[in-house]
Amino acid sequence: MSFVKLLLNICLLGTFLQEIHGQGMMITPVSRSSAWRFGFPVEQNFNDDDVSCGGDTQFFQNHGKCGECGDDYAAVRPRPNENGGIYGTGVIVKKSNFTMKVKVKLTTNNLGTFKFHVCPLNQTNSLETEECFNKYPIILSDYDNLLSYMYQIPNFQTTFNIEIQLPRISCKHCVFRWTYETTRDLYGRQRIFRNCADITIV
Image (cartoon, rainbow, N blue to C red; front, side, top):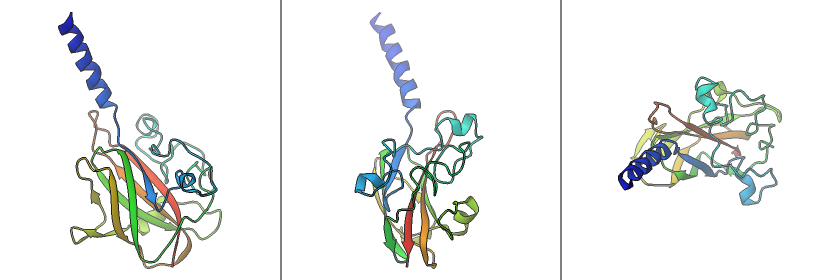
């Protein structure tokens, strides 16, 4: 019986490990969902380390698509983490010149990559778009002394301080986005986490 119990426990552990997914949040500039933790007058989101494109819905319903700021793609715009959504109230959390330190905290490290983009908003009620973000990919300025748009996540590390170069634009209200793409799980799925923050570039 003890051998059978051992096998059962091993199987349960394997199932549990399959369901562990990378999770994290952007601390600097602080994301819309996490800004309340730093005293900003915004709505509280206690699941701010799991803005993951709707979780499994991303694969089973949305064909891998993700909302611009990490929400369920099928949700009506503005989605909760987008400008005009529950958490996207337009509160500016950081003012920066063209060089900025980004801090990210992972609650689970599942390897993969970080990427960053920015999108300037022309009007108070403007929505972020992928087209806008894709115009302004962010360069990492201290990644092995090379200019790169992608940060490879090392094993075991959970806190990251990354220096980036913002585009040579000035904007009163820009949306800064962090994207975390994990390594593929046992089912071949690559989970995506996204955070957006409201900043000013001077």
